Image (tube, rainbow, N blue to C red; front, side, top):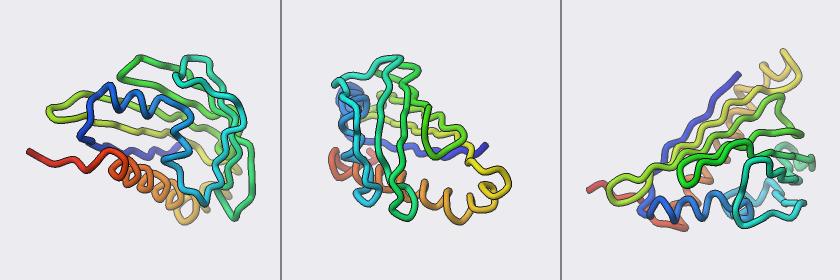
Amino acid sequence: MYVIERIQKLPITLEEAWAFFQNPANLATITPDYLGFDILSEVPEQMYPGLFINYKVSPLFGIKMNWTTEITHVAAPNFFVDEQRVGPYAIWHHEHHFKAIPGGVEILDRVNYKVPFGLLGKLVHPFLVKPKLEEIFNYRFEKAEEIFGKWQES
């Protein structure tokens, strides 16, 4: 099992962060275009536990694949979890934490994941899967700063 984690501070309120990040339609905004991310199911403006979201995505070599996630936990405005039900990973558990801090909000993204294909998956993880995930999460970080502004230490 592997973990990727990002902490980001943004100069917005907890409520503003929650309103944006919990809306499934905004996921496409913070996903790199080259992934061909396309939500196939109708999604509400607010997520709820038990919500299934179906996507098409091209994570490697432009090959389109189905990805279905379920929102398993929601504790507004501080926390939600999505878990892959169908997709490219053997396990995908993505936690989103939001905390008000002086002058803004701190966001913690944590993904626990397992690659498929046993030993082959483990062999390609360090030079194919991990760098791709790092790139995607770096893009999200930069895109959030572009949308909401950069955090300024006071």
